[in-house]
Structures are given as C-alpha cells and as structure tokens.
Length: 284
Ligand code: AMP
Image (cartoon, rainbow, N blue to C red; front, side, top):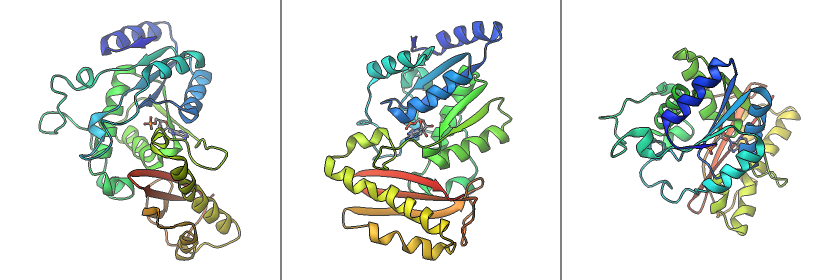
C-alpha cells in the first residue's frame, strides 16, 4: 500500500488500467485530518482504486515559510488511509520527485506557471511562486498516476480554481471533483496548520469563520454592497489578528466584485502570531 517510487506506482497503475479500473487521486501534504478523509471517502466511493499522495512539496513553499516544521506523520497517515480503503499511499522523497539536489529553481526545472491574473491576488500576492509549485507538482502527480478523477478541497479555493484552469488550458484528461470544507463544530475549518495553534490561538482563529458566516447572514438578509459587508468584519478582529486580506471575488474567474451576488466567493487570510490561516465561503 505504501509506495515511495514513481516506478512502483506506474507499474500498479498500468495493471489497473489494463483491467479497465477507474483511478481516483487525492493529492495531500499529509498530517491527514477529517478534511482530507472527506476527499478520500469520495474517491473510494466513486472510483475502483484510490491513490493518496503524501508529499510536502518543497517548491510550493516560499523562503521563510514553514517547510521544515510542517507536520509529517506518515505512519498515522498510512493507517488512516488503509482504514479508509485507499489502495496506494504514494509518499515520494523530494529527490524522487525532483532529482538530485531537488532543484528548486526554474533555471533547472520545468515549471507549470498558472496565468498571472489568477495568482496576483489573494494568497498568490504574499506567497509569490506558490501556485507555480502547486501546479508543477499536481501536473507531475497527474502524469504519474493518470487518474480519471482528482479530488480537491474548497478549503483552498484559489488553488482549486487554478487547478481547474490548468486542466482546461492544458487539456489534461482528468475530471476535477471539488469537495466541501470540513469544519470543527466551532466553525474553524480543519487544516494541518491548526496543529501550530495553542488553545488560546484556536479561540482567536474562530474570527475567520465568524466573519465569513456573518457576511453570509448579512448577504442573505439582502445586503449586497461589498463595502458594507466588509465593514461587518471589523467587530470580530482584535490585537491578536493581522488581517492579510478579505476579498469578494467571482467563484470561477476570481474577478473582483463591488456588489455581491450568488456567484461571489468571500476569501479571508488572517495571521495569528506566526500562523497564517485561510478560509472562504460562497454566498450563493
Ligand atoms: P493539504 O494537505 O493541506 O495540501 O490539502 C490536501 C487537500 O485537502 C487539498 O485539496 C485541500 O483543499 C483539502 N483540504 C484540506 N483541509 C480541508 C478541509 N478542512 N475541508 C476540505 N478539504 C480540505
């Protein structure tokens, strides 16, 4: 079930394809939680075989980000996957994916670069090059696993929109299946990075979902002016929060909205201490 090399995975995929079996792929960075498991469950239900990749992709981290301290819990991840009916957990090393010295510069590695319009905003603004790294690794995983379906969470909504665009623009023969955000009862969206939060921080982190739920409630009451909706956020913020962005954009093409409608997605990024958290909600 656990595979570390591209060749091993390819061999297995070849056999499955010969048998006419459909393959689902769930790309992850590991430290699996119920959010990841919801994607895995969907894949196991929909596809004959499911591959979960567990790879902390160095080329999607910017300098100074948490690449070294990102939680790595492969043994527990493998157990969760096995209990969930996953057929392969693909956990390559950076060297297996990127070669000797795992070259991080585009002087030496072919990158897949998503369109500027999709990456010059939201997370792409502060995480320069992040989505190049995401698209490159996802494209590599698609080439290795050749899935019929690939499952991505709405939690990373900008990522999902960019992956859909990449698949369309590059005619990649895979169907992208978006999966809803899984939240704690408190409203906090599950994330591997929640592990960095103290109990106190976790309380402060509720501001993200509170702001989004409140905006949605105001929209449902008939308020559509984005300025007015934005102002409702401030009462949830205090000195523990550093708001990076709160933006209203089209759910398909990320164009900015000044008047909210049912196609409007609200995106938020907030820092609590060193921990950067993101969340989003669709108003329609
Ligand atoms: P990550 O391991 O953080 O790269 O996430 C792997 C996949 O799981 C991505 O498609 C994420 O959007 C998805 N995911 C992470 N957290 C959640 C969540 N709380 N609900 C739904 N999907 C999630």
